[in-house]
Image 1 (cartoon, rainbow, N blue to C red):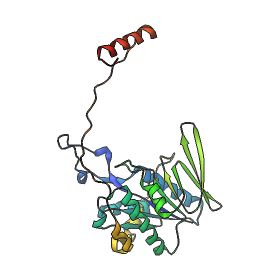
Image 2: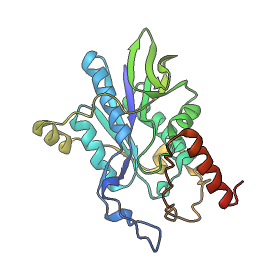
Image 3: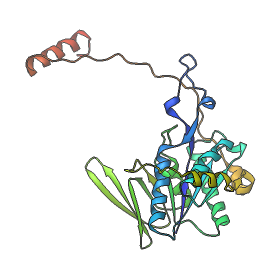
Image 4: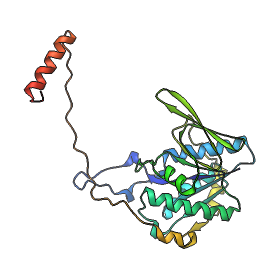
Length: 264
């Protein structure tokens, strides 16, 4: 059983500071970390490996030189191998372009591993864009079924079963492998690596694929999304709370306020 976990390095939002005048933030000055839901996806894969010695977990990311840090972190907690897709042509990719590049990378990594992946795990969305689009788009490119917002994942009889929480309770979903699964916040956090595993991860060989390594199809990468402007949303003033002695009096006061404001 081979599992690929696609991860992303994102700015640590806890240290994000915005220049009110420019409406932007200097992201290069902010420490980079593994995206929260991707960490949940990685832990989900490692837990499956814990329960089945035949499971092999591989991590992959598309990003610049610093993105190798999160791959080492994945190896430190139990990933068997990691692959880095790094090319100047892949800088500033939007969701659609990222999913396309990942689909090419999946095929390339399968060649390197000499085995197809039975399942691809991703976080439901990344901390930086919160778009939640890469998982579904990747499933489309790979022509695989997809299960979204999984809190728990299990494998049996050539199928993946995922539990998703809704407003009405829990829904159990099932799909035939190979499949793509996006993981939401789980009951467990990503485990801490030991000093020994961190040292081993620092020595691990992480193959790097450039655009040319992904084949001629990689030349067709495009950026359909164009950022026109970034700005800080205008802070709205707080509302008022109407608490008269009775509901009727509160309704009368509300009507009077709306009338004075010209709403009614």
